[in-house]
Image (cartoon, rainbow, N blue to C red; front, side, top):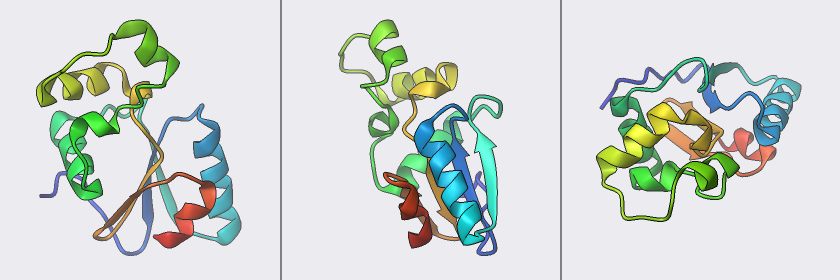
Length: 121
């Protein structure tokens, strides 16, 4: 593995900058004094390898990285059986549909469901 660099010294946080959960998680982390490196998924496009690596680190299928409830997903896509390659292309071209925030520290990776989850890492 290893296209995504991680460190025990800081938390890498993949975020959508307009997401309220991402904003709350960042604020919580700062209040706790946690060292954060935020990666804006709208500005820093993920590669297919990085998307696969994130899914692997989370122990999920690539398709499970897609928030199918996101308004952008509902407008652009219909429910369908897509291949892994299709899901990867969808995330690359429409990063806003990826579930986030995703936090990495060393060998630990979590999908942040609530802002306080960040202290688990």
